Length: 318
Ligand code: CP
Ligand code: NVA
Image 1 (spheres, rainbow, N blue to C red):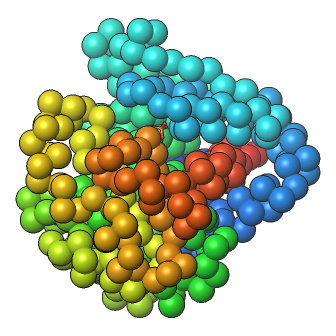
Image 2: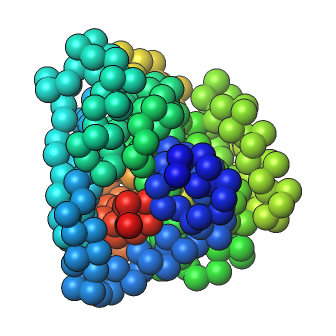
């Protein structure tokens, strides 16, 4: 069955893509969390869950966490992976996205792709008959948001009662967090400079979703308003991969959004500090905060493994 038909027929996540958080319903996201938690507490039980399955991992940008957790995750499920870097396939130059998709669908069982333009990822998903997972594009980082909400729920139970805050750049990580919060029904304040707001169409989609879920999604230019009384404070790099040339300008614009003692002290005393990593210590966050007992950044990183194992299983299982 073709992917879109499987989706429409309500056949669960099997055979589908995970290109955006918006590819899953709130119920599907919750079932991924439940499976991820089960896999985290009993690794042995799932050691043959994807036996014989092969994932192609395409990386057009650097990675520590995504590469390691997909490679280790599929192995822990009894499958294997193959790394494809620009030096190997030179996507879009040596060969078109279409041709790469049409080759890989005959050789492997799933594709994870980290690339620049989101359209490259959606195009791979449209052309490949096998599941495609977004391992980060300029527009979204959905696997990160899954690991992040899994982490929040481990520490804070009732999501609906929480105020979550994201401060910094309205980027790929912010987009995926917004969509997840909008689906799951939490309150998320985004504090960004006016010129670096999340994209309007993502905000509009989140407001639509919030109408159904009861979520509250608020943008403000004021980092203090975003963080005040929050249960969680999240930040990310001010210059994402591909924006290195803007780093100096961005450092000046974003400095009021640094998560330091003064800003973090506005949040609740037991607020979590979160960051997708890699962190630029002394820029978006100070050592004092990222190394504090409130920081759960390495649990987030570990939860990439568990969340993605659950996603791969749901998409690739027979
Ligand atoms: N958070 C994250 O995706 O890390 P990597 O860039 O190291 O994969
Ligand atoms: N926004 C960052 C996330 C890195 C995991 C980037 O795209 O570089």
